[in-house]
Length: 192
Image (spheres, rainbow, N blue to C red):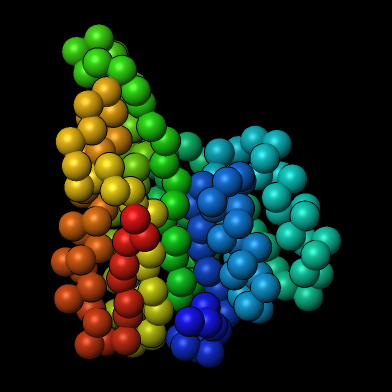
């Protein structure tokens, strides 16, 4: 089946991708740009993010790209930074992709490291989804919220317990939100 064109499906102009400095997030940003979407890239403020934005601008000079360098760590007000960078545009396609894995025995891993994993993979995804979902609903716009999940959320995953728990969370969140807003023309899903 062909990849759906999000510009025509939602009459969208802007998308936002978290974790877009490298890996899956970078690939998503390029795919969205290839469809004609302007992209807000939200990622760690590092050379990966700068290089990805530079490459996108070179390949798609007719489009706009904005970068938001931020960490999804406990105590960081990342929503404020994202809101500031997007307050003058309408973001209709949100890809909650940022995440990382912590491996090892849970009892031997510092709690702060585990909670940072939960913040990045689950809490930040929910906060970002809530922020943009509220905007879509209040403005009566169509759009989509996509979560990057993992099959680890459906099976016991010893030595990566916090990671698996966060992926179970975002998968369940996506399924539940989908039912709430599907009738409004907003699609919500999790990619396993």
